[in-house]
Amino acid sequence: MKILKVLVVNCGSSSIKYTLFEMVSEKKVAWGVVECIGFPEALYKRQNVNIDEKKDYVKVTNHKEAIELIIENLLDKRFGSIVDINEIAVVGHRVAHGGVKFSKSVLVTEKVKEDLKEYFAIAPLHNPANYAGVLAIEKMLPGIPSVLVFDTAFHQTMPDYAYMYAIPYEYYEKDHIRRYGFHGMSHDYVSRKAAAMLETPLNKLKLVTVHLGNGSSVTAIERGKVIDTSMGFTPLQGVVMGTRCGDIDPAIIPYILSVYPRQYKNSSDALNTLMNKRSGLLGISGLSADMRTIFKAIESGNKRAKLAFEMLCYSVKKYISAYYGVLNGIEGLVFTAGIGENSPFVREKICVNLHALGIEMDLAKNNVESNEERLISSSSSKVKVMVIPTNEELMIAKESKACLCECR
Ligand code: AMP
Figure 1 (cartoon, protein in one colour):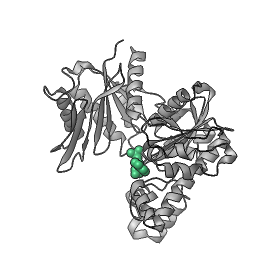
Figure 2 (cartoon, helix red, strand yellow):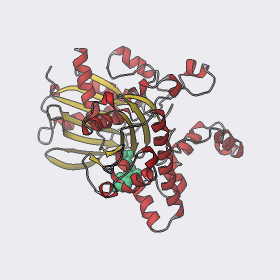
Figure 3 (cartoon, helix red, strand yellow):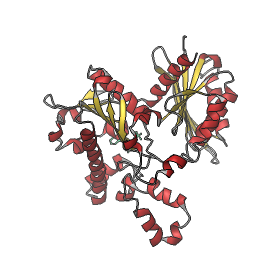
Figure 4 (spheres, helix red, strand yellow):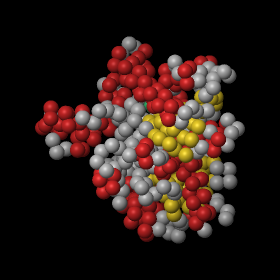
């Protein structure tokens, strides 16, 4: 089957990002984002291969209206990128949580939509928005198939002893509380790229992939299969992140509840905000969740910014070391996403003094600024350390195309 174009949509609670790919070259044709959906003014930014970014403030009250705007823009006679909706072979939807039901991408059917609703409670910010996006696309692009691609699916190969939490078993059985893991598309994408870079088949490699962005996760991958990953039931667990605390002693939560009963009592929202939005780099520095701002503050002598940076790097170092042990050695260590791709300081701080694990960085190579995938370990390093720019959108496009071809 010949697939011409794939539209990738990523619906958040108040935003929709989209990318239209041409699948022979696997290049982007058009892309953009509608932000602040449901606010008095939404911001629509869009761009295509022929036109620089345009921005407009628009009135968009819900996801359906945002999708209408995007499709109308793609079809625009002067500035659009398609002349007919049938040029789009399939729409790939990024879905945050696939629970235990979805271990791989699926073509959307009525049954799939019903199953997706089961995970609204586990991912209340994302899954309902993803669902709304599917309905809006069905309305705007009748007859064009949709595929769901899950952030959690790549991690479904974890063994039970890695994904279970040691709380009473009935919470797993009844409430599906277990580790799921996130950033699956990114870890999947960079692990395949690493295999290509190392000229070794994925099924002969043991890798640790480190996705360091606003949200961050570390994954242990053996022969292309996830063995363990740092994020858990939700994307809150694991390493220190921009605004998320990562691993903390769970007993801190009932303690905070007892110390500040008025502020937090009966308010899981306030506690979630504390851990998800007010912690991490932002919470420790008191300044910002953005690593670039943290670095500026460190330069001007800010001690809490330095502490935040050191805590983040230390937490990542611990996961890499643990997964090195879990995998009984690795051939490759991959850094990706905003911080992982762009910050030599963070990579150096994480990798320094890991010689015992055979990880030796070439500092000159590490300091080179580049958008390309590259090797940054020394020639004597047993573990090859790589920087590989992630491309989750392309991964979703390829998955959607493959899923459609499989189902037809
Ligand atoms: P992401 O979520 O992948 O978009 O990554 C966002 C994070 O990447 C933010 O903390 C940014 O500060 C960080 N980032 C982007 N560019 C750089 C850079 N040149 N140096 C350090 N951090 C960066």
